[in-house]
Amino acid sequence: MSVATQQQPAQAWPDEQFCSNNQPPSDASYEGYLSAEEVGLALERIEQGSQGVVEVEVAGLSNQGRPIWSARLGQGDTVVLIQSQIHGNEKHGTIALLNLIRTLSNSSARSKEIREAITLVAIPNLNMDGGEIPRRQNAMPWSDVVALHPGVVSDTPRAWYYSNFAQGFDVNRDFNPDLDYEPVTADLPGNSASVGFWITPAARTVREVYRSLEDELGTVDVFVDLHNQAVCYGHGFSNELVIDEPSSAAAGIYHVTHANFGPPITPDGVSGDIVLVNDGSADPTLGCQPLIGFPQGAIALMDRGECSFVQKVTNAQNAGAVAVIIANSSRSTPIALGGTAPDITIPAGMVSQDNGRRIKEGLPASGTLRDNPESDFYTPLSISGRFITDPTGHGDWPKFDDEASRRINVAVYDALRGTHGNSPYGKVTLYPQGTNLPGTALGAFALRGSAVILFETGGQTQQLGPKRIGMLSKQVEVGLGGIFDGLTDGTLDAIDPERYFDIPERIGSPVQ
Image (cartoon, rainbow, N blue to C red; front, side):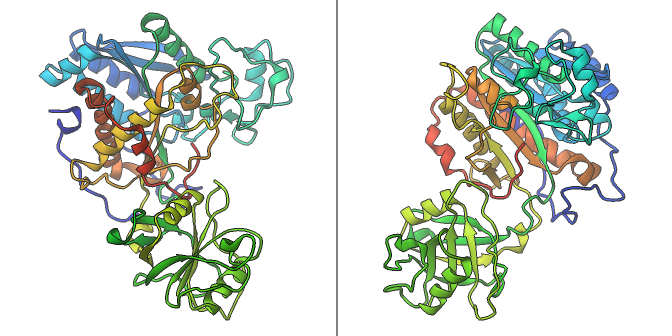
């Protein structure tokens, strides 16, 4: 029996009714979540009950002096480091990690098997100070930076990921693949595509845990960063292009934005063959000129660029199209189609660049453009190991292994979907793949050779309160169980890393 099946399965949740990304509801409740002190007490109880299996220690102190706890168990050659709550208002992973440590410390044959194969170190609550507020950033005014770091000698410039308003840092931008780097004024402020500066005590604590594991056991084989995203993020992207299974190699469901003109996309939708347009120009798929040979009653597929959205949709409508799908021209998030056009009577929207490419490669195809109200208030899980688009741009890191990260992501994906794809956690997506964040924990440790995954459930603490703790924590446990199963039964190395690209790509997701 795997770790993922040692507890009773959770039930799927109903639609969530609160969809603000910025402010908690007026009746926000934190009941059921653990304070920094309670995390320490829970780990103490687990250590005492484990009869020597679990070793708990204070790995470091937060900027405000709170202990940052780590727990270690197992004696295997495969090294796994898992951290949670790098953002203070993302607490579900903390509870999941405590549950996981408790389970793996028991006397069952499966737990013993995992401990023999794996050395696990878990940091259940990294951003202690942010968690007590709670908010995303830690609590660290710039004056503390100058006092703590001799190389930072002035008030400005400040690191780009420091919030003057919050007087604290997004800790998940404070990482660097060079474990010996120390912050200096000359390197500030940096930018989102550069490495971080090891400024915060929380990030530096993880650095020392990671360094000690490298020194003792060699490469840290797997690094997992647990997050939660804002509930209902991407609200408004409930439109879908459903490509029929028999018609195309691109069969599946693709998220679609909407147009600010023309009729809304309806649940009944419009159906037809999907046809790539030809406007007779040097760039015929742009649809900026009258279309040539377009079959009436089809859904027009065209590329973004050169002319207005209104012009594109007008040309398609004049040719007899029943709807328009525009493929984005860059890796950026698809946008709503802007413009005003009272004479347009057909629906339209945009898909991502990658999805547009998949659809084009799968033609001929038929499908339906529709609205799916059931997805309107649903936040899928998001998993990604690809937060570095240019590993060579950040030094020589010969251990970087993107395929290993992709296998880890697929292992989690398979575990969450269940044996037949009918698990209550089945809606799993990838982040958009154009992100370049080497200063995240994920990016920095991937460059050092770890297989990495950012594993994120939907719903931040202040937006869901206590009612979903069990469900969201269970998702994390099931996904992590997929990693442990793959590492111990030999199936991880057999995963085709190209399957990573078969996981649906999420549009509109925030960057963690």
